[in-house]
Image (cartoon, rainbow, N blue to C red):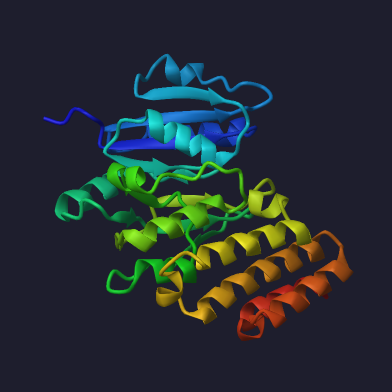
Length: 294
């Protein structure tokens, strides 16, 4: 009998104790109890205090490291975990109570030992709106769909063997999760569980995608997307138009952030880059950005 927990949940944490508390509680209240939780304090200036959980639940562990970024924290947590499947929860997001049970039921019913599994995902905005993101289709290429609609890492479960053969790159880069997941999906299939969302991605003022804006940070994202597209085999499965749309999305996003910050001239410059990258095809994003400029 395999005594390892079915799931290891790994939370990289840095400087957001209130949001982290909600993330931890979302794991503690799971209807599926066969899990362990590793919280990796990524060098918070004030060390995290998890005593109220550590004293009552032996499934929870706290690891500490110097500040190296979320990818290094995930790698550290993965290395010290024991679960058969690994789930990564950011410290500002949370699971709904049946998330792990949904994964467990699906894994028991489907014998795909080296497949990444995705649950439905929703976003929660600052005005408490909940927006459900589109599910993928299991009859289509998972890598292609991931490039069409990057879903982050919080709604994915990875068999330990997948992470062993495609280890996490710990380098402290922006959108490091996109780059790594894309590399994983070159080799392994992605399976979508149907149904209602089981994971909530928070949109809030301290999102890295919001805080780390501007032209230079956008150029970093563009470079990472370019490098990911250059990985062997990606251009055969992801059409150039999908690649260009993702690049344009980065410029549109940066333009809206600049407009919201009152940096009108920079926003116009960024909007121009979005259009020349192929963003003229993305009518909704164009008018959304224009709205913020007016």
